[in-house]
Length: 242
Length: 242
DNA sequence: GACTGTCTTATGGTATACCATCTTACGAAC
DNA sequence: GTTCGTAAGATGGTATACCATAAGACAGTC
Image (cartoon, rainbow over all chains, first blue to last red):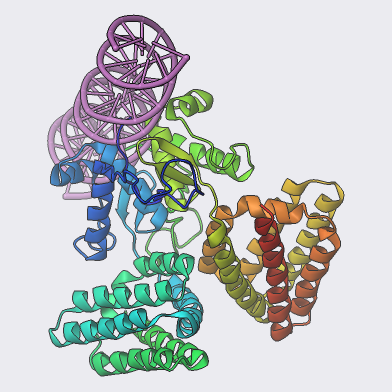
């Protein structure tokens, strides 16, 4: 058979203790497919604004730019479509999804629910290493802000939350948040670029971090909620001004 | 160009008031593609347990059964893969996703957060028609229980929540819940089949309904939370017994 | 000159062909 | 009889070919 390397693949769960593999030497194949590589490239490109929202994604053009066949491109587009990053316009074809303002508020609300719950759990369950990582992530965000790199901020912020959710043991929630964030990626970029955002955002995140450090679940919950509320308000302002 | 009929397509937003179309006569094409039809069929089939969890989905076999080419089948599989209903095993190919027990608890937790919030909003915002629909949906669930049709119960329950979220104006949250439910579809079926579940479930849902009817948001919130907690407990028991 | 009909082209939808690799079965050798 | 090597089949990964249709250009007509 061929090789595969999608997204949703079983990275091999525990599977119990079979005869072979009681020791830790399994073969571990990566099985890189063109499809998998292309998926990453395309997703990164969209999330990095190398394709503008609303921009048509002409298949044959993509093939040429990516150096793969239409089969691969189309399957990747289907995947991204299901993720909500690409939308297929009837009788016209795929285009970069244009975020829906009316959905943005809902997305921020859901994020508020999930992130604050994760922050609370994190305060209870995180190990010291994870808490240190959180602090480091905030430093990275700070540095990116100072370097005037909005994309860097975005990337580091994503990292921060990934650590938060992982330390909280909320993998599924993280998947949801990540997927939702993808749909408002451009908005996130704009909120970051808001003047005076730097100090406020860093401050809010440090409050979350501090609360987790103190193992104060409720404070972490509240701080996290406050942070998302701020961002949601910003996004609302931006959308209102468009 | 060809035709399209995926999932994520813009069903044409308001678009403002352009010159043409101030009256309500737009052409409205459905643009049915084989892909779209196949996607529905396959998703329904999986959700209806016509393919068992873990079952391999051999592409050429599916082609034959569905009467379409591999291109279509593969693109549909990519979509379902992104949705989490299908997983691609490296060097082996696609199979029906096997739900991860460790994720089930997380999914129920998220559902608890989102559904209770939706119930609260529903109590505030729902119009009378929607509230009546909710009641009717519960009746349908009741009837399905009495008819001994677990699948009917599942379908009607989904309907109930769809109405709830829609009336609450929480479309995005509904998408999330639906997507999460797909991953624990088999578990939902088993919780429904639990002896003595009938009366309890109906009772809990009626309490939610009643609270919404009374426009008592907090009560709706609590009732909804209680319901999800019950179901989560059941699922936990079932998983523990496996 | 404006309008209308047609033709071309761009593009997506669908089907098929080919290739690489894994799996399995069979047979030979010890 | 067990084990190892090899060959054949199954199956996914990838590429290409063909077709239908929609959008735009162009020309002909009133």
